[in-house]
Amino acid sequence: MADILGGIIKGFELVITGDPELYGIVYRSLLFSGVGVILAILWGTPIAMLIAMKEFRGKTIVKTLFNTLIGLPTVVLGLILFLAFSRSGPLGFLGLLYTPGAIMIGQAILITPILVSIGVSAIESVDPEIISLAQTLGASESQAQVAVLREAFNGILLSDLASFNRAIGELGVVLLVGGNIAGGGNRTDVLTTAISRNTAIGEIGLAVAEGILLMIIVFAVNITVVLFRKVNYIVELAKPPFSRFKRNREKR
Amino acid sequence: MMAPVAELKAVTKAYGNKIVLDAVDLQIREGEILALLGPNGSGKTTILKILAFIENPTSGEVNFLGEDVNFKNVEKVRLQSTLVFQKTTLFSTSVYNNIAFGLKVRKVPKPARDEEVRKVLQLVKLEGFEKRNTRKLSGGEQQRVAIARALVLKTKLLLLDEPTANLDPKNAGILEEVIDTVNREDKITVVMATHNMFQAKTLPHRIALMDEGKITEIGEPAEIFGKLSKNLASFAAVDNTFTGFAEPTSAGTSMVDVSGGVQIEVTSQRRGETAVFVNPQDIILSKEAVASSARNVFKGRIVEISDLDSCVKVKVDVGKVFAVQITKRSFGEMKLNLNDKVFIAFKASSVQVI
Image (cartoon, rainbow over all chains, first blue to last red; front, side):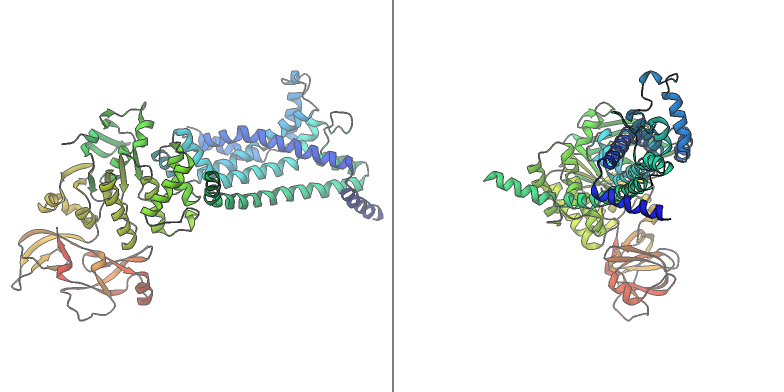
């Protein structure tokens, strides 16, 4: 009991004193998950738009597939990716196994179903008249689609957020394809894998510190996004008078 | 005669097996206001969507400013024609962003855009509304934003689908004035769908009567309302329009028997088939029979209540169903409910013989 208590106290100490080793891990967690989310947005958003806006045979099956994939055990996905990236695997020539690149790609694949599923329902909930409306106001096909995306913005932001939460708290894929390498120039240990390692070797203090930081990051990112939505809204509303003010100054 | 702005030649539109437009020929003349008048499902909205080039005809030809419209030039001609939907659809952002949308698409520079938005808001009597979020506006204000968003584009052709259907008289009046102004001053050609007889009689230069996907009559209002087309009988769907046989009375008025045990007294002397219309605002609704100068008093039951912004539309079945428009305040004070027994009353002089 005293050990655990001591560990917790040490954990708080490490967080407060800004231990460089610890914050290196935090940085990698944020970087890998962030890039993973961006990758997934880049390919997930067009997929979601395609599924939501086009009528095609087997649409329901595709939607169900993406919904089901949300529940895919991360260890299983990690194993599949490990086999693909391993030296003798089909993608072995890329030499990605146990590198940051493998983690980013693995996380992007992992969260794609979340991004697509929530994205599809957000886009589908937009008034179907919006496309016709944009068109009759003169928008081209692609401009009309952007107008729909803008209407679905809140839902899409939610899907991005849920994806980030999933990515940063993820263990299975990161462990299997990243290897949890804690030394050298190409470190791949992140908060989740470090917690797992430190707990196993009895470094309770470090594990607690990492746990605290992981929670802080998740809360901070979520709160920032909520605030961003509010600020964005206010900025949007405040635009005309500000720009008018600027123009007046230019005249002088 | 001036060249037509747009022309439909034998245009048919079908959704699956259902034909909604049946070989329609129609010329839209430069500078006119043309009203499409007909019951629900007669094809008015489909014609408007085809003229807005957001719906393709199944067969037939569409010309715009002398040019045949096809998939190659559709995005270009679309810039010259815009439609305001019956159901108010707005982007969930500020009034400014809604109205500026089409200007941004047309790459109008920001200073000019700001100025245009300001001017059009003045026109629809929503000065200073730029920053407001559209979700926080009343239904009437939202519809005015939707109209302003179309007007600001100054397209050759302005298409309006039941522009005042869900509006209270104040908002409807503002809109009718605006439509008239842009037509006269900006020379914008207007095509509007309506099933409001009153509006059809006063606003447009020409009326096209529609029924079951066809244009059955087309002409000037006086001409159309003058001869009683048998098509008008199918206008039962239009509020407060009834047809029946008129008999003169000894008092110098006439009684029109519109069936259902309802006889409506009108001020003019006439005999024979007659169509009449009573403006929903001209009908007085009461819970008790009241002594008044109104010649037409009927007892009935409330069958429908619907909310129109500052007013309430109450439908009363007295053998025939009458739509009555009352203020929200009166509605609240009278504590009206569905199936309540009520009286309706209107003057013989309030009845318009169509």
